[in-house]
Image 1 (cartoon, one colour):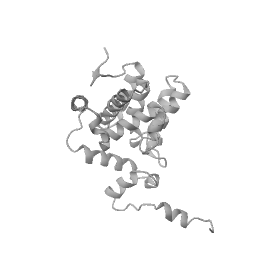
Image 2 (cartoon, rainbow, N blue to C red):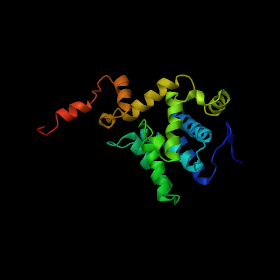
Image 3 (cartoon, one colour):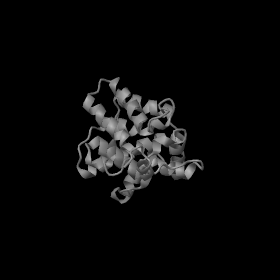
Image 4 (cartoon, one colour):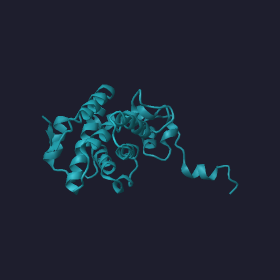
Length: 213
């Protein structure tokens, strides 16, 4: 029987169960519960906005969105969002999922830390970002009822120290490849956590390029 949390049915297909177990075996408790909350808050946001979304694809997008922070999925030179997107795409290909659906999940993960774009894309993409923004940044916090927030966190607790814990997880996943933070929000993470980090300035890159003018 499918579980329901805050009125949202948790996908229980073999694909969803495999995704859950893979993430559970790979990620820390903090990231695993965060990923589940991303799905739930994303699904709740979609329901409130009247958006029709494939729950299974949303679930995979949410569960895999931080897998790029972890070995063995973290590459040496790609953004962690791209690593997670690639991991999800490989996983979905193993189940014969349609290319367009795989592309939506890939985009959802790759764009989840790029503010202002996902909300204009298809539902899976928009709602993974909405779930992340709610759980990490508290955006649209009051758009969810107290009962919804409590029900989600009762099943997948944030725990003490989540705010600093998630920043530490981001830092651990990017500190060995700081060049991948250029132009994205993880530059702020390394600026806070790595005393040796030197932020690349976009305008400096322009002004010091090989072009004469």
